[in-house]
Image (cartoon, rainbow, N blue to C red; front, top):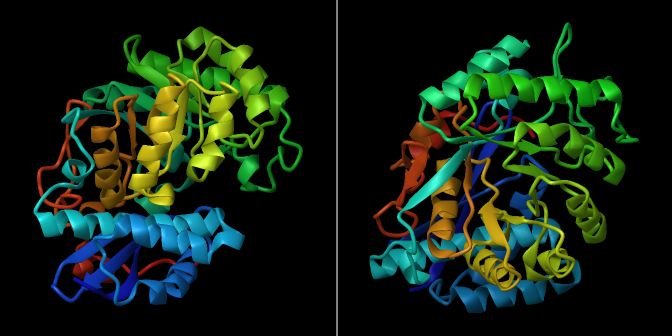
Length: 394
């Protein structure tokens, strides 16, 4: 079997795009993966195109050898979009290899150790606050809207939700200075924990707890929006609400270690890290309770290696998964195999054509994903539907 073609497809996903990689072979087996160019990956498709000639004519089933080769030819510019490109290629090669054997990817990787995967409703309220028109979702504007959304999460069978930081009132907005959004709003570039932000976070969590009830696990994602001082202050605001974890992004594992020591809430981090070498310092400093691994960015096989290192440090892992259905399936195979799995992210708030973009959508029941049984990832990309929803301009 030989690789004959490497190409990318893109679809409108509301306020962003979904990006798909297709690798074709001379035996008619096609490998798919989902990657992400909308957040931090500008130019990623071009990098994949530049790597494609290395793959043409090669046997896709030798995925470990090909990934090693790709890392070698990009040795001087590792990480970042290079790692994301290699991860996308690795995932498509895994899909081909499993399909050639007539197996789900998780069988290829030694699993499953579980067949139902607990989910949390991610970005709960975030898309409704930030992009309701683009996503064709009901807008979230008040604390009463937050209470109602908490009730909706319960009614739809989820047992956990994750939210970001909302500033509600006359001009509501998503507090996200770490990503330089809403530059007319305070917070960038100093990333300080202003009192009105901490007070808004407290009221938001109280509203979610009121709507979702005492049995709902609530997670809070602070992203890169503060420095160490601010993360500690925010964590102390969250402590009375019995939080499942606080998610924090920082480039300094020692700072994260100090934050972890300074709060009673479990700390999760890692979604913006790359490769075993990027994650290891956070484990060596015992900086996290849960290590978050992005399988589309890192590749599922590389993600398993990261998870194995985390297991040696008695640390659980969870996938970063705010993408489309294909990425959800890919991350589900990762979750099925790792013994030290904690919980899986999913975005129930979607554009109306979301389900059409794949041939088989994930089966979610009672807040858990049922492991797919089909070969490869268990789904393929519906190319006709993707082309019916052309991507938004970058």
